[in-house]
Length: 221
Image 1: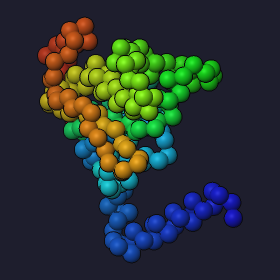
Image 2: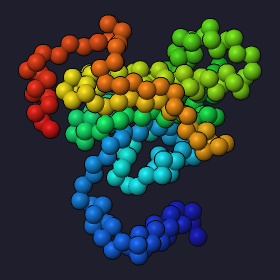
Image 3: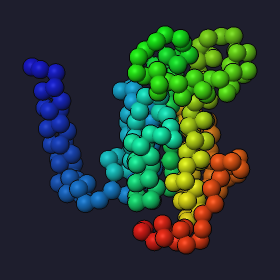
Image 4: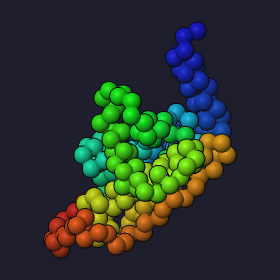
């Protein structure tokens, strides 16, 4: 049997099991989605959002990329963020990294990895920003773990610098921003940072919205 055929067979078994438990399961699932959470996670196959949070389909809106980055020029990420915040009206945006992240590890080195160098450059910037702290961590494993945490922290701060988040804060005082790290060796998530709506920002990153603009944007909801 080909590898992909196993996935199709597993899908049929999963669908049958769901129907045995609830005949209306897929009928209800197809109606709509009203998630409270947007999850921005790493593309690592070992960190599925629904699995590690024990949630069901429809509860978490998910975006994943290498090393769970929030890059201000990434139209894919920004499109997901805007839809989640302005249409789905999520109340929480979570950036979740994980210890042992291959992307973070690669960014700590100097090997030329081709195209992904440009993506990992964002993590190198985090390392450079926190260089004093990191260089004073002599244990390589602890330094690696700390960079994973700092990377999550900086990505959450990047969220707060977007007009999407700031406009939502102005309109409805949501979403709250969270930074978490998943430990694959224990299965436990560690909270790194929590930013509530309308938290103080560095002035250079704070946008001012005209009243009519705020009303116009909020009226689509």
